[in-house]
Length: 292
Image (tube, rainbow, N blue to C red):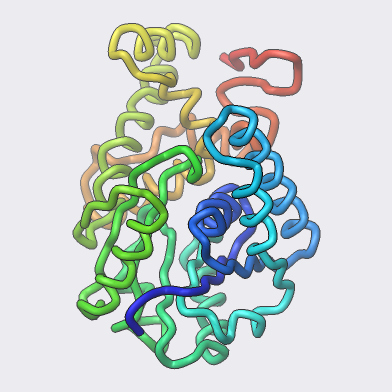
């Protein structure tokens, strides 16, 4: 297979619908799958709204929006992905859930199809070993939000074939994204650097060095970051932040990656950030209010 013509996306959440969005705008036929019909419909509604904002801001033409919307197909059954060239798994950062999906989808795919994961931290080699096609398995890690962020990490497992890597690189290039190759180490490049910084910001809060507002203001104005680290953690999802820190801590066996107990407590409370209405900020009112 020389190039990708159609793709399947498994997971219609924030990352999955973002991947479907940019792929459809690039001209690919996209099959968006999730376990629940309502999640697919919610993902399609998000795509529609985000594309409308792109039109109003002049980033895309309305004709392009209409064409892209027609290229996205709601796929309630995995067998609708049987003929696609590339499947991208974009479910939550849980290895057992990913393995379960691979066991379901691999027997349905054509032999030459490439299977990719959008994991932000889990070993590509280990995930590939749970499939029937480790040579045609690769990490394609998009940044959040996908329609806005230009960068993509390409991560090869030990068995990933050169042809698979070239196919994935060509796909990312056609999306208008810039890619870089990351080695298959826990959390790869971006999250290996970013998540320990966020974890340290949470420790700074936990130890009483500064308030939520002081920490975020300090990093926005003192380090010229667009978003404070605690605000960013809420945007990513505190459960995802915790999962990545656990992968780093387990995979590298270094105490500097120990998840902050306050992060663990927030996740246990269900205060997962924006998606849950509360995290380091409370989002249930008109404006976010720090919770500490």
